[in-house]
Image (tube, rainbow, N blue to C red; front, side):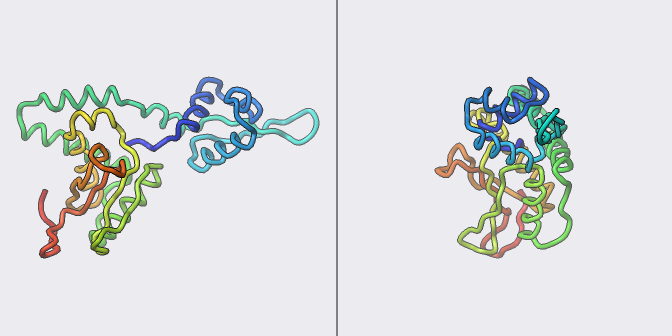
Amino acid sequence: MTPLVENSDLKVLELLRQFESLGISDLVNKLGVTTTAVRQRMDRLLVKQWVERREEKSARGRPGYRFALTDRGQRMLGNNLSDLAGVLWQEIKQIEDSQLRTSMMQRIAGRLADLYGGVTADGEPAQRLASVVQKLRANQLPVSLEKTDNASLPVLQFNGCPYPDLSREDHGICEIETKMLTAMAGVPIRLRECRCDSATGCCTYELAIDLADKELVNL
């Protein structure tokens, strides 16, 4: 998964990667927008910790500020690896041994789960989902916990896809995300609706629970 980035913010980040650091007036000139618009974007990026503000001393008057990418911002820009993801997925699919293929996907999912905060070991299933959302949002991922018709069974809803083109061609890639969420939650999760087939444009995951007896079922 990758954080959802607005196109206007992405332009700012790309400029900072190109020029190392820029002031408000520099950004206004390069983006062709108002000072207010630039300040709003910078405030948003500061909150996400993708940029940092550096004081610049002036010969007279108040000191000014310049903005630069943080390490976190650099990593985020480097996460645009859709081509690599597509190649790796094709290679995984070519593994003829089904057990080996499943094992590899499970290991990848486990590594991703560790990257985003590890396994949630305690609590009821719904509480575990809430913990997963908290961890993913801490990594700036566009996810929320939504109620369904049955209030005891919330669902995870993602407003962005890390590889939208690939998922349109092959929903099988969604299995890695499902396994990662299962690893993080410590209870079985399944894909309820892919954004490619959804009127809302969101990916929705739910607890793998038999509604008849409310018991967890194996995936």
